[in-house]
Length: 91
Picture 1 (cartoon, one colour):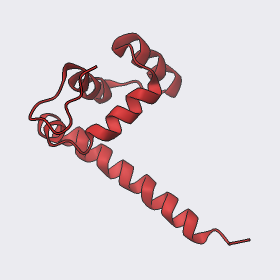
Picture 2 (cartoon, rainbow, N blue to C red):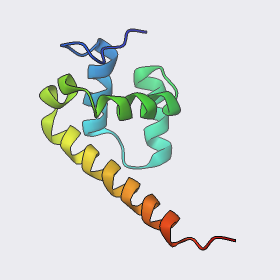
Picture 3 (cartoon, rainbow, N blue to C red):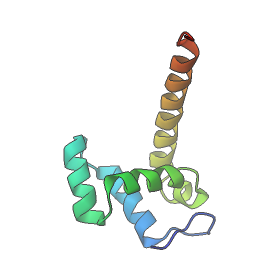
C-alpha cells in the first residue's frame, strides 16, 4: 500500500478514500459494507487513513470543502471529549 502523506500528490487509495467519503452512505452498516466492497480495506483502516488525510495539504487541495467539513467535525468531537474529561469528578 502506498502512502502519500508528506508528498505533493495523493496516492490512488487516498484519492479513492476522499472520493468515497463525499458520497458515502450515512448508515454505519451500509458505509462499512461499501468500504469493504469498493476500497477493499477494513473500516478501521479507512477511518485511520481518512483522519491522517485531513492533515495532508494535498487532500485539502483536491477536496477543500470535504476536508474543511471533516476537520470541523473532528475538532468538535475533540472539544466534546475534552469537556467531558474536565467535568468528570475525580474519585
